[in-house]
Image (tube, rainbow, N blue to C red; front, side):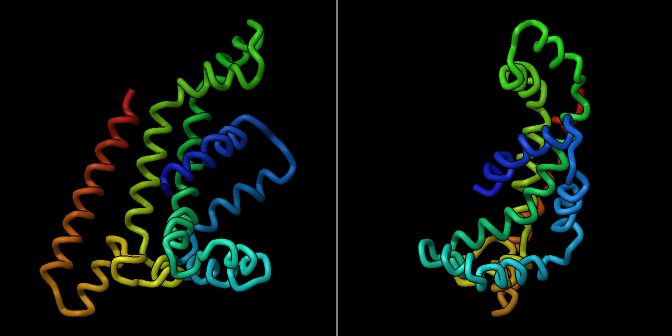
Length: 198
């Protein structure tokens, strides 16, 4: 879910940052870098504080977020989306603007040119961005621990499983879960490298 949401935001935002110059572009660019450079525990704490403010409490009344499954998705999304946007921006930077301009001169609207020319050309970047977002979400620990907790069979994800197994002294289970994460990381790196090749 996190990877899909990240792509849903990353494709239009990456395109916007790549193709347009506008007031506030530097601010959006900086905001995107914040989750990448902030310590993970601070991201989790920021999300926790956000849901203690009046707008967050209103959302909490409708959908329980904190220490529930939506908090896991939101904590993962806070970090993974930044990586997906960066990947999509680089992808759109590498697609020549000329192709889009030719489509516009041949009668396509801006949205038709995007859907028929730019998006098909960016398929490798979309796969790479989705894979990176998924991998980043898979390994997220700090924000989930602070914002979602580590409740078995409720908000437990692979990194918190390792933490829980180590905290009860079950080293074998912690190693088994860690090996799953290592295999997933290797598979993701191979897929991203293959998608990056011409």
